[in-house]
Length: 130
Image (cartoon, rainbow, N blue to C red; front, top):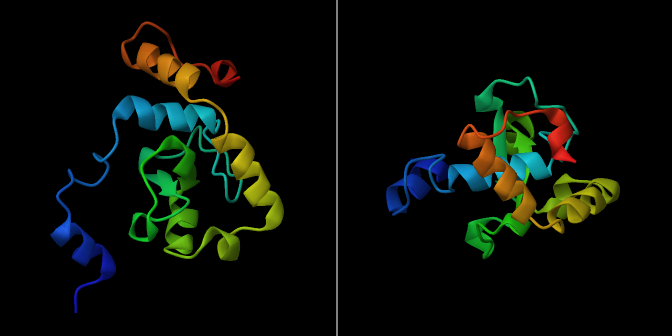
């Protein structure tokens, strides 16, 4: 019996895993969230890149989108632990309030910053995260 992920990949017309979002938008979200898992608050600045993920607050199967207001930085452990649980079941009230504050921030300045970093026009520094 194929797993849920295998079924999803089989019917997906999207790009390979990790390629469903532009690199500058991914980096902008990481910058907005200060390279911190918004679930467990783990600092991901020095984490292995494979341990830094984006999680959909509302999964796509339930009508969620790839809009920045529906995406948060999450460590691999939390992303895997949450699976397809509703946010209200996975995260406490304070965590959900923190997530709401973060996702309400405009991504425009973070996207501009991400593009400059990626173009080599600016060197990444934690102080840039604001």
